[in-house]
Image (cartoon, rainbow, N blue to C red; front, side, top):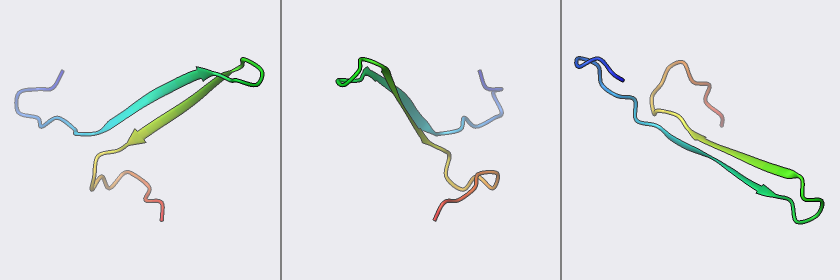
Length: 45
């Protein structure tokens, strides 16, 4: 929960999973979209 004077960070992401069609093992996909203009995030080019 945010403090009333703070602005929430707008970011998005999800975790997807499925069973592999080959060996029925668990496959996981992590999708992350960080907040824009965050000086603490490393930029990938």
